[in-house]
Image 1 (cartoon, rainbow, N blue to C red):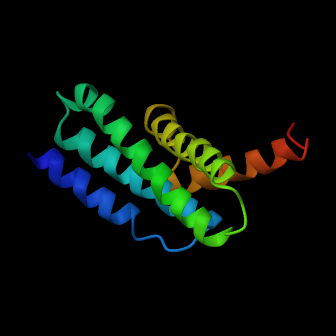
Image 2 (cartoon, rainbow, N blue to C red):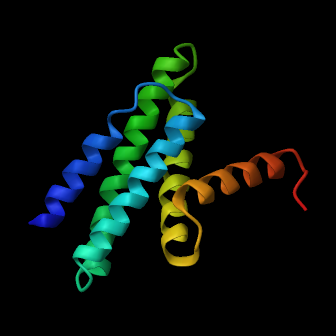
Image 3 (cartoon, helix red, strand yellow):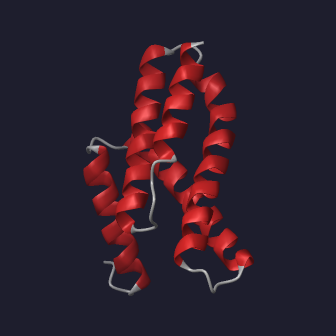
Length: 128
């Protein structure tokens, strides 16, 4: 049942964000990485089995949080566009947290900063 406490803690932490911004996205990413590290350390044997169910819950929660913050910030935009953006961002954040856990030696903060810079460069056709 320790896993359930961890999950509720991270869900509460995720919902503490009040305004859509890059800093908020970073906060979401850091919360997810902290959750993964804690859960995988405490529940080594069952982490992989639980991660499938937890992934669905966290992606949906991320999507809802981002969607509501986008609605708050961009009141004149249509729900469909904001939902689409919130879905893409939530899956990107969750996927990046998994990539960080499985493939990176960087701190979560450095990983996020490097990934954010790379995305900006990619969108501006500046990536080398």
